[in-house]
Length: 208
Image 1 (cartoon, helix red, strand yellow):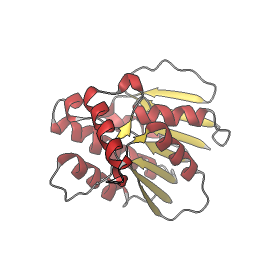
Image 2 (cartoon, rainbow, N blue to C red; image 1 turned 90 degrees about the vertical axis):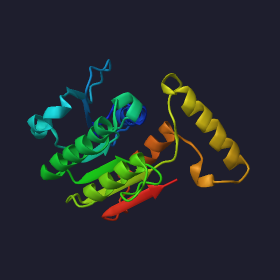
Image 3 (cartoon, rainbow, N blue to C red; image 1 turned 45 degrees about the horizontal axis):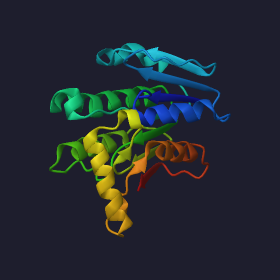
Image 4 (cartoon, helix red, strand yellow; image 1 turned 60 degrees about the vertical axis):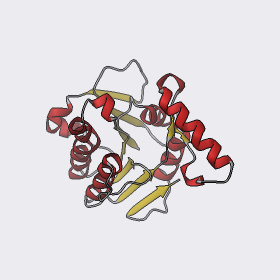
């Protein structure tokens, strides 16, 4: 299989790429990134692209499955408008190009609580994206709604570390088990396992 990965330099994307490169089920992996990455592999194609001009790369978006792991935060993006551009616009436009090119399988990292009617900005974006991509003509769509993610140590912010500790203590007491933080590697393992499954519905949603 030829896997496409959007957001391959992020915390979850890095783990997806690592696992794909070591999985014999996948013979080719193409990643689409904003900045240069220092990685080489005989199965890996790296496409450094300008996300504001996505349509120029449409002919490259061809394969068997698209893993969409792109995402940012308001603080990193600089504003709600710029976060929306990354978390909704770029992801949707890329997914549409893939479906237009006949990519049959789409795998998306969303978020627990995603809801287009939410009063909160982040779950509202995720909910809007979920509803939009469900309308695209992929053969199968897999949407993963993880809780707080445990990123690689070098990427974890202080607030994230405190949040992980807080929810781990709650779930250890049997409270709010659905909010137990999930390691990004475990998320990536689940996504690839489900991508290789032959028992798939048109739309599949996985929550923690």
